[in-house]
Each structure stands twice: as C-alpha cells, then as structure tokens.
Figure 1 (cartoon, rainbow, N blue to C red):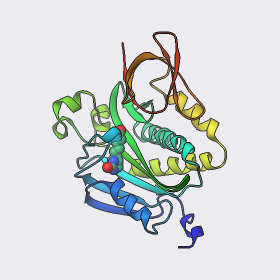
Figure 2: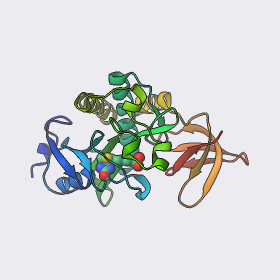
Figure 3: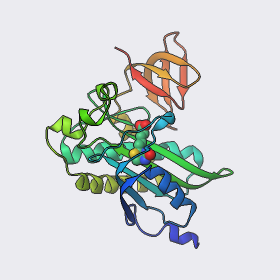
Figure 4: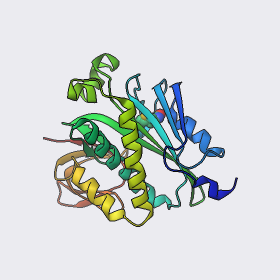
Length: 255
Ligand code: BTN
C-alpha cells in the first residue's frame, strides 16, 4: 500500500461500528496488520472479551463506550507514552465538556471521578525493530452502566457518567467530542507540543501531590507522587527519602 494513504483523512473519518466484538482492540490490531488507514475507529456496543491494562479483563456492557483507534504515527516507541497521556487528556476534557463532570487522571491514564474509576485506556503497539508500524489506542468509558452491570467488588471502585449525573448520557455526542479532542492533541504531539500535553496532564492529574502505593509487578512501593517527568514517567519520593522514577505500574491512593 502507498504509505501516503495511511495519512489521509482525520481520526474518525473511517468508523467501523459493531453490535458486539470480543475486543475492539483485537479487531483494530488485525486491521492495522492489513491496510486500514490511519485514523480508523472501531466501536462496539458491547465487548465479550474486553481487555484492560496489566492483563486485566475489562467489563464492557451495552451503554458504555468501547472504542479503539488505529494510528500510524511517525513517532519513536519512547514517544508512545505521551500519545496515551494525550488521549487521557482528550477524554477528560471531552467528557467534562459534554457532562460537566470533573474528571481527574490517575497515573498513567485512568479516568477518575471522586476516587472511582470511570474509564481507562489500553495502548497496543506493532513494532518492527525500533520502528512503530502502527498503534491501537483502546478507550473504555462507563457511560450508562450501573451497579447491575458489575460485580459488587468492581462497582465499589468504579462509577459511570449516569451514576455521577443522574441521567442517561448520549454516547454518540461523547464519542464525537472525544475524537475531536484526540485529533487536536494528536496534532499537538506530532508538531512538537509535548510540553503542552504534559502540562495539561499535570493540571488534570489526581495523582500528583498525593501519598500513593504503586505496584510495578516486581515490587510494591509507598511514597509521595512528586512529579511527571518529560517522558511521562511518575517520579515518586519514597518513604526512605529516595527518589524513584516509575515507568509502569498500578497506583492506589493512600490516606
Ligand atoms: C484499563 O485497564 O484501564 C484500560 C481499559 C481499556 C478498555 C478498552 S474498551 C475498548 C478497547 N478494547 C479492549 O479490549 N480494551 C479497550
């Protein structure tokens, strides 16, 4: 395929809309291996095998947003973290604009309302050597779901826009606004606006300045979330006083 074709069109100019998918990320990864263009969006009303970060299952009932965006960026692998942070910023801004609900971002990219999880982002990448061939950014937002859609344990730490606003929220308006913001911040990322993305993430952060516990997979650490560095890593001041730069992990707030 002619490489130029990948860059035709904007994010969301090709949308594949499905009633049910196992995982929109899996479908978008398959499309990426073919010749689907940059900006292709896969949306499903519900997913049967939604995937979350760190190998977790993502519960995706009807009423929520499950969508994945195929991107063919000219970014280095190290810059992809900023891409995910920019999508978190985009979603927080879009959801706030449509519903008025203030959304915080828990590092790296959990969308939170008053300490409960509203949505998440899973970025998957196809590399050839050190070259990024394509990226799939999957976004799950709890829009019109309620306690009946989740196990009691999961609902204790989750929320939805309907639960927060007390009314049904139109998914199509949300998705249009999200794609618009993602297009804006993607443009920023690819034209040298990294610092703007980092600053907007810092403004929306619900992690910085808080006591946290972080599980990296290898160890669990306790400390103070001091900063977001220029690569999107979390800088933590440990109880010992040492400073640690964390590139991946799951954060919980400590009171
Ligand atoms: C997280 O664990 O916080 C990330 C959740 C990402 C879920 C979305 S829903 C659409 C896309 N398809 C998937 O299978 N996962 C992502």
